[in-house]
Amino acid sequence: MVVYSAIKTEWRTIWQDKWLRALVVWLPAILFLTMWAIFATGIARNLPVGVVDLDHSQMSRQLTRYIDASPSMAVTRQFTDDHTASAAMRANDIYAMVVIPDNYEKDVKLGETPQITTFYNGQFILIGKLINAAMLQVEGTYNAGVEAMRNMSSGSPVPLQALGQAVPIQAQITPLFNSNSHYGQFLVSAIIPSIWQILIVATTVLAIAHEARGQGLWRWLAQTPCQKLLGKLLAYSGVFLIQGILFLWWMYVVLDWPMHGHWGLLIFAQVLMVFACQSMGSLIYFVAMEIPRAMSFVAAYTAPAFAFMGITFPAADMPIIAKVWRGLLPVSHYIDVQLQQVDYGTGWYQASHQLLVLSSFMCALLLAMGVMLVHRNKALAKISTQQGDRHELG
Image (cartoon, rainbow, N blue to C red; front, side):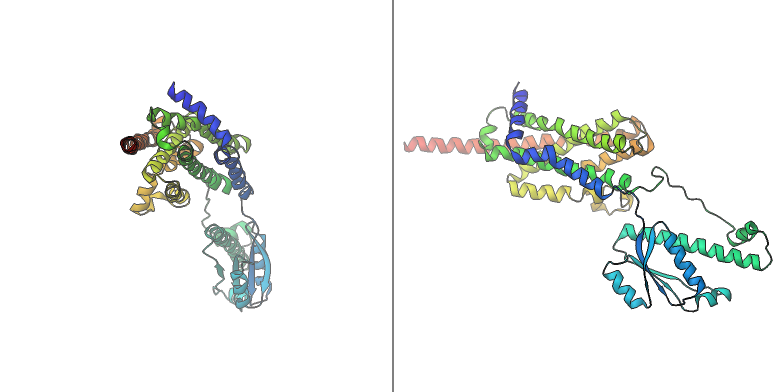
């Protein structure tokens, strides 16, 4: 009864407090739509590159056309020297510059190996990866064509035979689980849970802090403290779960991204994820006992989540400190379940380890209640002593 009454009271509080209302209603939707809009294109195309053609020959112009024909690159500028091209790249006018050396055509016809040099900004990791892969493909295709023409001119009249001599082994590379290399499926599906974790932990801290700003935390917790705290958390749990289900529905139903697993298992993992984040949020508040300090802890704890999830950098290669921090983040274990269901379609047994770890975060809630009771008893004892002193003075 106490828990149910606390839930009803908290629902009224949500609609009265504009900050809590924003955190549970419109802010998550805006953040999700913003992340989706940024990566809606899905595939980076026509990245601007510059060409420094020092040869000005037919073959150098042909190589430039090959570069421009690549889906990932577009030759937007041509330069006469590498200094001007370097300045343009530093100004972010182009992402890469390709230097075709002097005597390029002459060296090719003489059977020598001229060097084509490509410079790109390694700070843009994804862009650099795309340009590197595209240039390797362009050079491989162009070199195969040049070698095939050379073989035909030296006695191989059949084009396929000449091409086979030029490229004796052809590799077929097939990406699994994201066949078109869609960056939305790769990044958005991981960014959203990491933002969701931040919102859950921060909202939990602010919801408890609301009582401290209002009637006073210890007056609120004077009677049945654990039931009141549990009711407050449960009032938000359903809302957070609805947010998570809506995110999944948008990504894997509306956008029709591939989903090969069990919806029930994934939603169950979300339930555990919500409880785990609320448990950590409660523990953070009762350890800090001040709103600014607690929110600082929330930022330091949850902000690195995306980097430690193992999506953009393999978790196996992380140093021990990063692995420990990753283990303390509920979203790191949830994202493993999400990947298993979305990509691999595994069952309950394969997800059992991650589900068990998520369940273990409930210990943080028990610890938070213990810390809360210690602070509460000290505060009530102090209040009782002060009231006794006033009575004696009176």
